[in-house]
Structures are given as structure tokens and as C-alpha cells.
Length: 431
Image (tube, rainbow, N blue to C red; front, side, top):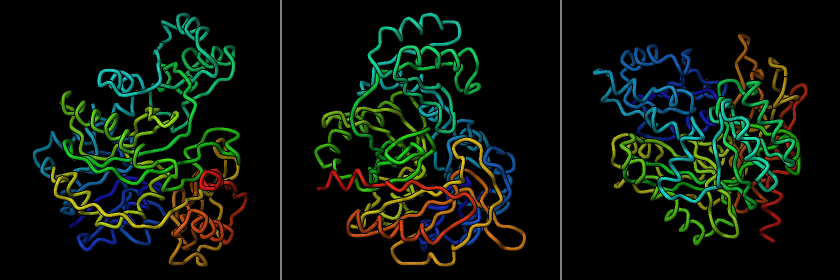
């Protein structure tokens, strides 16, 4: 099978790493890819939102399946583009259509969807610049802290947790009236704060059937002990000790099944991954957010734990044959530590040479590239905020962490940064 994978981050390198292990993968192309995907697949210089160029390439290279990594092309309608083309519509493409992608593309849409389907989530109300004063009054009535969410895509940075009413009002002004997140904050969802432990559950669906993939816990803030600014993610751990079978049964019954049924009832074409960000509130799951793709860096922790053929899983999703797929898990634990450019998530430098990658080969660790590129002379250079994701594997979380951090210590570049406390809260829970 000739496969095209869209994206250039750590998630996509993890996808590529898993795809090329399958005997059913003949050739893998990654557009645009990074220095990591270049080592195991064919990178193609095409933007993930250049649908015409993607369609032309798919036909030229006789691509048998397209896998969409990031959310942007999904929100912009790549699945609809394929469906509208007589030449492309028969090619399986993994991801929801434009309407389905609104589960991530619009926080307001997703909240209304959850309310309609009876899915447990935090109470909320949406405001625009026209209803700004009503928003201020609404904030005054909320218990602290108050959560503000930009309606649209904001690169994982559009959620603010405000510890005072004045801070929340000021933030609402910045978002609605001063375009803090550009178009993404033309609408703002003001939401009840849920107190509990966060966890991400991943679902693969063909639109009717589904498989619940391994759960993961990620670490969003830049600083140790969850301090500082929010990021796209600084690390992840899988499995998560507090996610026992009883909790997963609640997730499946109260959230996964109503979500899949709700999509079907609203005639939303959804053959792809669904990331459900959850809060465990005293043993009960509440949805914080939906994402319409796999998470990053959670994917780098989740995919190594999938034992069954990943290409077969993808193809079953894209051809509505998921009911017949036999899903198997590995028994080991995984932990992922993200290495970032100094200054991230604010301003940072690109183009620093990465040292030590040649020392990282091992059975119990994988180094996934995210913001990297190959220099014309062959060196691997930094090319983004989140640069590498190092995943350790082991029979216990503690052993997986040792493998990950011992590998992190071998890698360096000018002004490298990583959190030192990934998984430490998990270790405390296990004691």
C-alpha cells in the first residue's frame, strides 16, 4: 500500500515510525515531514493545506490511503475536498469532514454538541464582542477560578484559567475586543472550572464502530510542577494509574457511545481519531474538550503501546471495517519527555545544531522529531518550539522514565530546555 501522511510534527513522526513497521506499507510519503520522517520515509515539500497539490500528488503516486495528522487541514475541509472529486473520493482518507472537525475547530460548536447529546461537561456560555458586557456580568456570577476559551484554533494556547474576576474580565476584553488570539477569539466560551485530574482518552472510529486506544496523561505547562505558561505539551505518560476499568466503562458509556451516536444522528461523516480531553472529578469523567486528531505528545506515548498492525487499523477506519479489526496492546508502560527551544512557548531561535542523536539508539527508547530539519550538509537543526519527544518504555512507569531521561541527557543544542518532573505525580499515585 502506498500511503501519504500529512504533517510535520512529533505526532507525524510517531505515525510514520508505526506505519513503516507494517508489512502492508509499500511506500510512505510525508508532506512536509521533518528530519525524523526523512530517515524512514519520503518527505514531500507540500503544505498540509494545499489541497490541489495534495490531490495531484495522490493521483500521480497512486496513493492508496491518506492519513491526516494535524487539525488545520481537517478544519479547512480536506475530507470534503476528496469527497467532491470523482478521482479522489474512492481513496480512504483518515479524518472527519469539515463539519465533524468543528468539534475541535469551534469550542462553541463542541459545547452545543455535548449539551445536545447529554455528554457530561462543564457549564458554560459563549460571548462575542456584541455581547461583551453580558460576558462581564456573567463572569461576576462565576465561582473562581474562571476558564476562558477562544472558540477557534489557537495552537493549544487559547485557554486561560483566571484566578480573579478582574483577571477574567481583563482577559475577556483582550480576547474579544483586542483580538488576543486573532480570529480564534471572535467568540469566547466562559466555562466553569472543574477540579480533578486530567487525562486524555483516544478513540479510533469508522463512523459507526470504534476502538478505545490507550489513555495518556500529558503535561501542558512549561515549568516543573505545572507552573508557567501553557504549551502544546511538555510530556506524556501511558497508562495512567487512576484510569481503571470502572472509570473507562463510565467513559465508554457516558461519553464515547453518545458521541459516536450523536455524530451519526447529525449526519456528520467521521472516519478518524477522536481525542477526548477529560477531567476525572471524584471518579466521574467530564469532557474538557474534543480534538479531531491524535494528541501531541500523547501520540508518542500511545502508539508504541499498540501491538496490532497500525496500517490495518487505519485502513479499517477509512473503509468502515473496524468491527472486524483485532486490537492488541503491549504490556509495557511509556513515558515521553519533550525537549524544546529556550524561550518556548514565546519567542525562540531556530537553526541550532542538535548534538548527540547518534548516541540514542536503544531497544527501550525512541526519539521522535518534531521541530527539526536537515541542513544541506546533513546536520539536524532545530526548526520549531517543540523540537524532540523522547519516549522511554519499561515494565513500570519508573523504568520507562529512566530510559527516557537517560536518553534526554545525551542530546543537546544551544539553549535546550525540558521539564525534569514528567511522571513524578504518577509515581506518587502508584505508591
